[in-house]
Amino acid sequence: MDSEDLKLLLLLDDRGSLSAVARQLGLAVSTIARRLEGLETEIGLRLLDRRANGVRLTADGSRIAALAAPLVDQAALIGRAAAALGASSSAGSVTISATEFIVSEILAPALPQLWQTAPGLNVSLRAQGEIVSLAAREADIALRMARPEGASLIARRIAEIELGCFASTAYLAGRDPATLSLGEERLLIYDDSYGPIAELDWVARAGLTGAVALRTGSTRALIKATAAGGGVALLPVRFALEAGLIRLPLPLLAPARPIWLLTHRDIRRLPAIRAAHRWIGTTFAALALG
Image 1: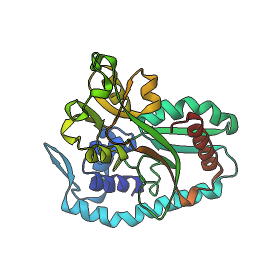
Image 2 (image 1 turned 120 degrees about the vertical axis):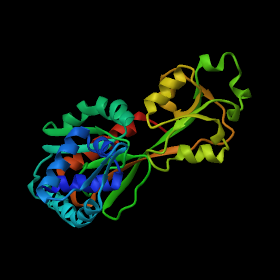
Image 3 (image 1 turned 180 degrees about the vertical axis):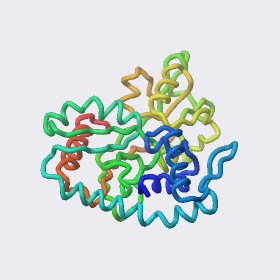
Image 4 (image 1 turned 30 degrees about the vertical axis):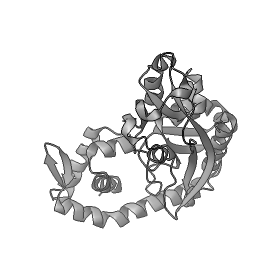
């Protein structure tokens, strides 16, 4: 019995849908469904309840998932231990999970600097909004905007991104930015896919929830929508200015968004992980985001 198939069962139980599991792992829904069907055949029980509105676990599926949890955790522990025992240089591989914007706009352009110091390192950059499990080896390193709980994690605050409120010249249509009342504008904001981030708290404290016209987990979508004249958005200052947007005065000081670098304790001293840590820290420091 493959522990990876049991892990899929656990993830389905936790995430609630095949599509959510597929997004987290970067796999096709059809691949996950096929592997779970194979697990059903192997075990000889109906684990999945297939309905018009999606796939859920049966009662038997939930019981098997609960029994499988220690086995999946132990397999992940063995994998981390094997990686630690076998690592002797910065050559190797590292999987980094981050939001799509961080992957495409910050990490990917800086890869040549990483390979100057660790030329043998094989890198997997996963653009994921969902929280991944480092304990289950869904990634080796994660970059997130909210600090998760967990005694097994090493969390380091590596940057604070300065935020500001922006609109396009087309949206302003000649209006003086200083005269705008944000509660009367169309507000474009992040959704809650990243967890309890500072922007959502700011919107609530500023009494602007009623003005929200768009929620999305994509920074690029927010910038594009704002540049097209869609409304007013709270955005990273550096990238909003690069997009030619106009900064607006705020009724309440905008928060700074922290960026957390997360690694599991068991692998933090691996040369490949340490090389990736140094590169990520240097990359964010060079951006002057705050």
